[in-house]
Image (cartoon, rainbow, N blue to C red; front, side):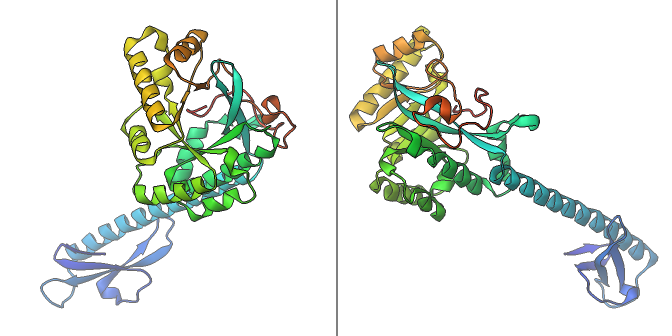
Length: 334
C-alpha cells in the first residue's frame, strides 16, 4: 500500500523492520502491533517534519481500524460458515415432499423434494434465506449437494413409476461432484429441477453437464416459466422434458384472459417440443378446472397436497419421515 501524502511516499509493511525515524507503528484498537507505516520524502532523503509525522500517525490509525474491521468480518464469516455447516450436516436439515398430480385424474405422478432448516425450539428458518446465506459464504453448492443427497435417499421409498424431483442450481449442476450423487440411483425416476439464483455464465458447460446426466436417464425440468427472461432462456437453450409454469401465471387464471392466452401458448409450445407442462401454485378448484380445459397435464400446489414429511405421502416408511415441521411452506417453489 503506497500513497503520496503530506510530501511522503507511504508504504505499509506487515512486520517489516524499518528505522524508527522513518516509520510509525500500526496497531489495532486493542494495541496489537500489525505492522509499520514507512514514509520516504518524495523530494529526496531527509528527516520528517512534525507535520509529516502527525499525518503518518493519523494514517496509521486509519489503517489499524480498517484492518480490525476486516479481521472482524473474516472472523464473523468463519463463525457463520461453521454454524451453517453444522446446520446442514447435523440434525438441522430435513426433507419434505409435495405431490405432483395428473390434473384430470388427480393421480400422483411424482414428488418434489424440498428442504427445511431448523425446527424444534429454534423454529423453522426460511429455506431461501439459508440458501442465499450459503451462496454469500461460498457454501452454496456444498449445501445444494448435501440436500440433494438426502432427497435422493427417498427414491427407494417411492412406488414406481412415480418420480422424484430434486432442485439444483446451474452452479451445482456443473460441479464435478454432482455426477457422484447418482451412483446406484435409478436415474430414470429422477427429475432435476433447474433453479435460477444467479446468472448462468456458461451455457455450453451447463449443457455438457446436463447431456451427461440425461444420457443416464435423468430428466430436466425448468422452473418458473413465464416469470421472466431467465426461465425462457433456459427453455429455449436446454430443451427441458418438463416445464413448470410460474404460480403468478396460474393465480386466478380462470378470471384473466391474458393469463389464459399465455398458458395456451405454453401448451402449444410444450406440444411442439415434446415437453410436459406442470402448473405450480394451484390453490383453488376453479384454477384446476381451467387448467384442464386449457390442456395443462400436471399440477402442484396446496389444493393438490401440502409439503409434508415423506411418511405422509410415500407408500413405504422412509427413514426421514418423522423429523421437521410438515406444513410450513418456506421455499418459494414449494
